[in-house]
Image 1 (tube, one colour):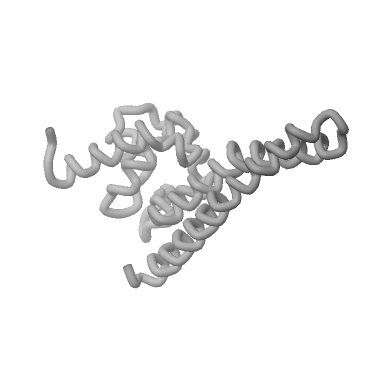
Image 2 (cartoon, rainbow, N blue to C red):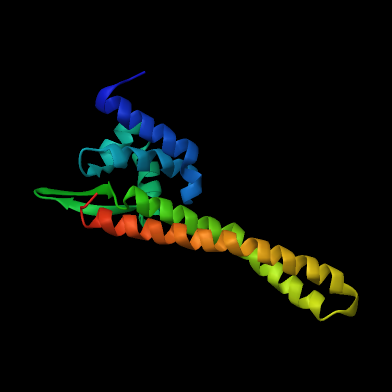
Length: 167
C-alpha cells in the first residue's frame, strides 16, 4: 500500500469511488473528485487524465458534470491558457449536500405519502382504524425530523466555521 501523498490521494480516490454515490456523484466522476480533494492545487484535464489513466475526453465530460453539481470549479492559473479545476465544496458542505439529497430523494416523498394517506383515510368511514395507526406513526416520526433539523443546523454551523477559516 502506498504511503505519504500518493497513498493519501489513492485512498481518497478509492473512498469517493466506493461512497460518492451518497453525494449524488455519477460513478465515473467519483475518482476525479477524490483526486481533486487530495491535489496540492488546481489540476488541468491533462493532469487528471494522466493520474487516473483515463481519456481526456471522458475526464472533460465528468468534470463538467461535477461543475454542474457544484462540487468542482474552474480556475485560472497565471500564465497558462488551459482550464484548471479544484474541489469546490468543503467536506462539511458535501456532507450537508448528501443529507439534503437523501432527504429530498427518499425521506420527504415517503413522509408526504404518509400525510396524504392519513388525510384520505381520515375522510373515509372505513379507514378510521388505519388513519389512527398512521397518526401514531406520524407522532413517532416527529422526533426523527426534529433530530434531522438539528443535524442540518449543526452542519450549517460547521460549514460557516470552515468557510471562515476557523476550523
